[in-house]
Image 1 (cartoon, chains in turn green, brown):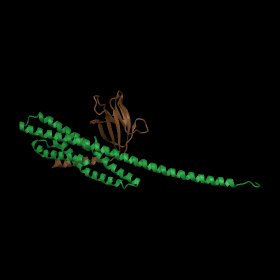
Image 2 (image 1 turned 90 degrees about the vertical axis):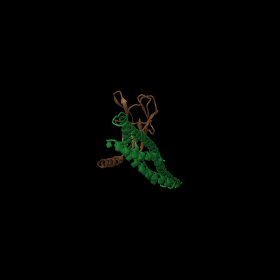
Image 3 (image 1 turned 180 degrees about the vertical axis):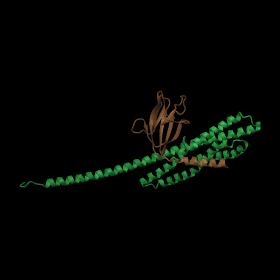
Image 4 (image 1 turned 45 degrees about the horizontal axis):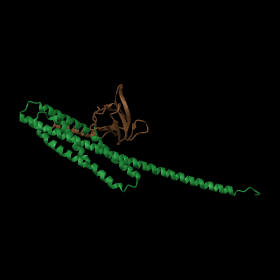
Length: 210
Length: 118
């Protein structure tokens, strides 16, 4: 599920990265590519974390059937929640990757606007640069949309884990309540037994001469 | 080379930044209806403006604790509701933007009034 999200991003990253050296040679401001390049690299780094996450989820899913120890299950879910939360943190709207994505997109749009009004280059050169930046802008837009999809999926995943953990917590509370009830029932029985013994004792007591 | 090294250092720093040093959780803000002709209100999480609510939803990393969701009011910021953020958990709040002032609808409501929990 998450792998599916990562693949188009990888493809567009590759395209974006391939496009960049050519552009770098044709303009005089190599630093101008930094936001897009940084975004690409961060997205790539983030993408690499996905297989680990998928594996962890698969392993945990395989263990679900064997979960008989509630406390162990709770711990497992808590750990998984930590991993998913970290992934969500990277793609959250105020997270590092998303913010870089927004910067990269803004940069590509600005660059395109500037180039369209730039008269320094020959028409064919200008056309080439504009096309390259249009491609970069479109690819960056798609990448930020992919991030949005990943964000949505991580959010749902975290919510599911949360619900499962809450259910297990409730289950533990039910079990504890059941144990408490057993104690009360045992105590009640003991009291009843004692009361019966006492009644028998009282019944057996006869005043002298009766 | 120097530019590359600087970029690499920047990326390393940014990635290190992905691992929060303080405990954080997440706040999901959904505006309902997602698309409306009504002007979207400006929202603040503990006085920090929520910049991007795209397609009616935003997921924000937030420090663990209780945070206030507010909007612009006549006499300054108007608190709409409080959001309890727990470590590695997500708290969802829907904001009904057609009402004036906007109204919070908690996915899970806390015991206190106008408090959303995870």
